[in-house]
Image (cartoon, rainbow, N blue to C red):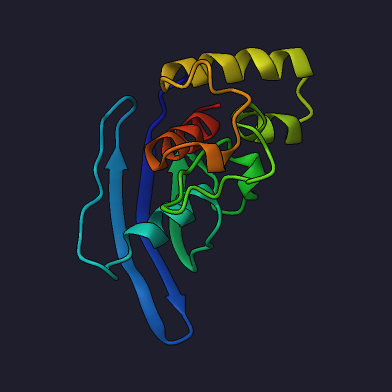
Length: 151
C-alpha cells in the first residue's frame, strides 16, 4: 500500500450561507498517523467526506501526493472511508462487502477474493467470510467496513 501526502490549502465549503469549513489548511505527510479532533459540528466529517470526494469545496486546493484531486469523482480517487454507521450491505456476506469496490473497478474475481482474504485476515475476521452483517457483532461489522475501505 503506497503512503501518500494529503494537503488542504485554504479549503472553504459552505451550505448556502452557512460556512462549514473556513480556510482549512492541513498537511499530512506520507505514513503519518493523523487524528482529526474537535467538537460536534466543527466540520470533521465534512472534511473527511470532502477528501473522499463526497463533498465538493468552493475554494482552495485538495492535493494528494501534490496532485489536485478536487474535481475528481469519488470512484477515481482511490480513497476509502469508513462511515460511523458502517454502511454495510445487509444482503451481502463479509467477503462480498469487502469485494464491493473491487468489483466496481472490474477487477478479476480471483484477484478480488485474494485481496479480500488478505484484509479480512488483517482485521481478524478469518472464518467469518460467509457471514452476513446481522450475524456479526458491532465491532465485527466495523472491522468489515475497515477491511472494505482498505481493499
